[in-house]
Image 1 (cartoon, rainbow, N blue to C red):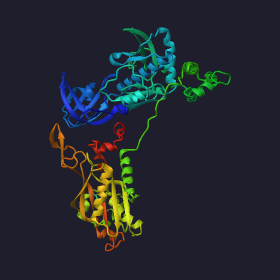
Image 2 (cartoon, rainbow, N blue to C red; image 1 turned 30 degrees about the vertical axis):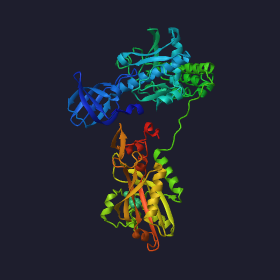
Image 3 (cartoon, rainbow, N blue to C red; image 1 turned 180 degrees about the vertical axis):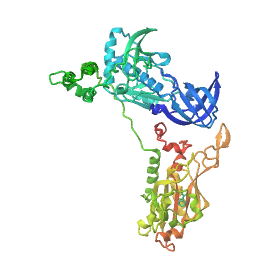
Image 4 (cartoon, protein in one colour; image 1 turned 90 degrees about the vertical axis):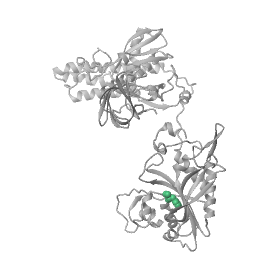
Length: 608
Ligand code: PHE
């Protein structure tokens, strides 16, 4: 079983809980494997996270994390004891991770900046902090005199405040979207791409910032030639870290670029500077704004300098200088972007993702159509309904023990004086008497009621919310034969020709006689046996030849009476069972845990 990588979806998650799946010793260290993790396993140039994993009786001080074929190994020193099955609290060293994120995203921004300067160049490799090295490696010659242009692009991408998005993909989608692959992708990892603004997406499994506006200032420092490839080295500077505290990141000694002290400046002054910075974020605005003219925005704030108290003038001057540079660089980069914009209109576009109906909705649509073809009408009734409809009218008076089978959620609402408490409908049978009322107690009734149902239960084959479909037919002379015929019809339409239904005696309060309904297994054709490796073997899918799906029976006279129908004149049948269960038995679906249907996990849902 592989570890669920929570950081792929949310790189900002700092805490989580998980279950311990395995514990072992390795090179005098303890390693543990969890069902899910927020710890980044070293790879893709990004260093591993550090942090702690704390259980009820001990703690692992995590000093390294490795990928190990999808089973993430958290290694470190254990104090106390951890046990398989423990629920543990995960906490990553956030300042360290956040620095790694800055370094990694900076690598992608640099990669893009270099591509903007040298069209057609291919990024081959990168390192974002492992062993203190930060660089991106390219296939074509890059010379030191190109550094200023690269720097200008770096600054432009940062000031443009481009969104950075990530997305899980399949290998085929990568091809379809024409994502260029400069290197062989690992085949044992989930595939993800990262995209900066509208630039070409890149394969990436690291933790990324949300926008280039969040990036600490990035500086391209040096070109180094290695094995015929060209590396652009870079640094990022945490503006919050002061030069002497030594916590500035990425082995940098440069002064933080936005470290100008603004605390002693009047608010109006800093607000005016920020307002100008804001205009730089949108190309159209920046391109049309008057900054340096007579009535220019910049000239305006510059005038305020004289009015400031002498002791603030120095830092105000620094701030203005910095702003001036930002304006010049931004305007120039927008200008140069326009001149050099290279749009190849013949390239096929990126195909937008196409969604589809959720598998449960697909099943509901199919079931509805099957019954509509033989004259049933699809109806829907309240999901929170009175006790009367859910139980009492179905021949289950208050305190009747049969009610226990429907582990019911009660709603904390004012009860009705005639219809009792409000419940979340535990089955679609609550629609039976409602349907009789809707038709003013005048059969014929041919109802198919498909709705959400709720019960207090949750495991691999049950979810607290699920769907049922309920058939109800009431007319003169309706017999078990009609019920059996309807079940056979549905079995063949839904599972394919040759599928049979079987009814077995059972008990429900609201039907008499009552049955459980089985469908023959379409893998073994109802025999319970298959030929495997030339021999007769038990069918693994059903084990007995049949699948139990739900309940049915002839409507109890008391139920007809509750709906105002004379049981002497009319008879009826009803059946009801779960949509999810019915659906997951379909051939070849192989869904063994129905909770997956509600996980919202696209990699699962996209298969259907
Ligand atoms: N409502 C029953 C259940 O939830 C199923 C059923 C429906 C049985 C209609 C008989 C008739 O289990």
